[in-house]
Image (tube, rainbow, N blue to C red; front, top):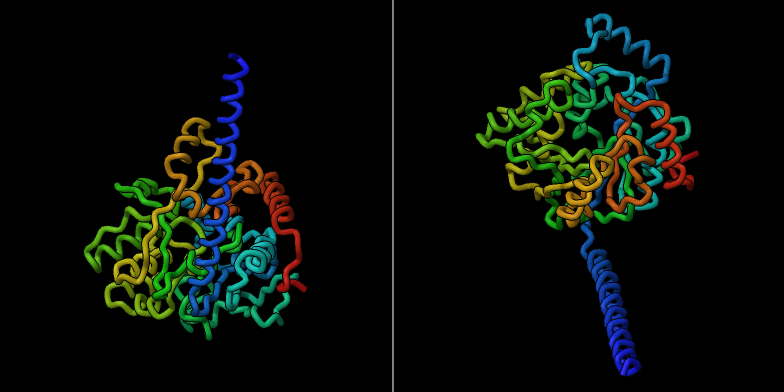
Length: 373
């Protein structure tokens, strides 16, 4: 009798084994078919990418910066992230970000690198046909500058000669972590996909210590004043964002918004009255030129139990969201499946953190790209 029961269980196990194998085969075939379908649906229009870059170790750069700081009496710090040297520190992130383009987003049409003070990365092949260095003075108002303010430069990005109608803006600490299609950023009609963090009560309004958050608040305030719609619930996901050139120019010329944007363009350093490029994202949302997608970045290192529950609850969203961290090794970025990763070199990073991040860069993107000498 025992043998009969054992034999039945053995047969049942075989049935389940084959069923499980069939399910895995179905999932695999579905994924391949879906991948081919996505490839067929690729948008047909060109998409450029724009980086802002500076080398804070350059003596000439620091000499000019310190001169303006002293003359404008801004050599003291009111906020934790206003004029710290870490904002201009170069850890060769741009080199690895360009490697990530070649590896995971080869469809990028052209790469524009906005910089100032005649700076050029020593490793960059500026003769490469897909690379264009853009002096900041060529896009800023003729009576403005020089600036050490990313918000001022980003407000003028639409002035870059030959920039495609559809383009991306990235910081040099942002990377294409895995193969990404153009549809991640735009739909077939050319509308942007705005990935944002949603908080019903706009919780970041409470934080007045960060000039970055104040700039987000200013952007939402400006949109609300002009269009009468509260937008404080939506905070940028701190990733690579998509934009429409003609819409950005239209926003800059808007009767109600132009004063805020023009005010920002003339600020040499980060200012508490600046607007962030979030204003362009919100403008696109208001004008039905953007698909808003709520993002949830994977939680690691907060609380094991709470992290597990959060990541389980928002697992579907996390798969398509930006992963943001400061230390790539402690945050286990190598095992992260997020399409876009931002390894932020913040004011809190130390030498150990930078070593960790350098190790990640070399491990994740070890091969020299076509954009290097």
